[in-house]
Image (cartoon, rainbow, N blue to C red):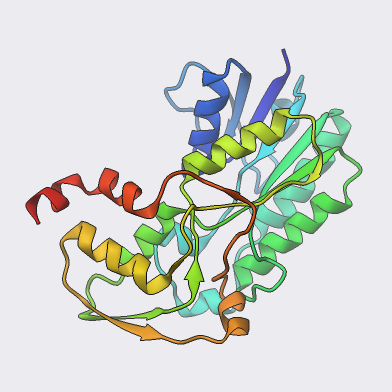
Length: 270
């Protein structure tokens, strides 16, 4: 049975990918800075940003799912002024380049890279870093696949939570369809083993809603009362900020259902 290495396997998406691989009976090795308690997988210890442990982690590996990334905005759950000027590239660019090189030396049969919908028009530094890493994959001689996904619900939740101290929320009116990591994981695992290669169908959530509607549903789920100030953005500016609608595969989990799972007590008290 082929051995699959997952980078970023301890992140939100990575954990869902690993869970699905194990559930379907695949042999799984997770590349991480430190091992976790999951005994259903092999643990390879190292760091994509430095390359430590990477050569050893790839021994005997047939398929690589590269779900590793480093987004300061996602980690802190908020935007700071520096995010409009710079974003670290050690994982997403140098790390991807290093990983591709080691995969080639290890004769990996399929390299599946997780990316983001709308990168070609996005202007934020993190998006430009992600696009640079994706372009490295496209130029690789390895058999590769790229799956672009919309931003995840958990990140939208963190960003909205970061506004909770404000009495009024300025929110764009543009349409958006973020997605749950569980749906993205299902799509990625399918793409990893269906024999296809190249640019694969992108994936977004089931509902095309305005950002203001996402915010309203969030406030309802949390039992919070804030005034939403709708902001109109030009299509060019919205796309530059990553506010797009994916027209590929659609996930099944809606934002409303995700919120019900996250905040049942708040809804019961409302």
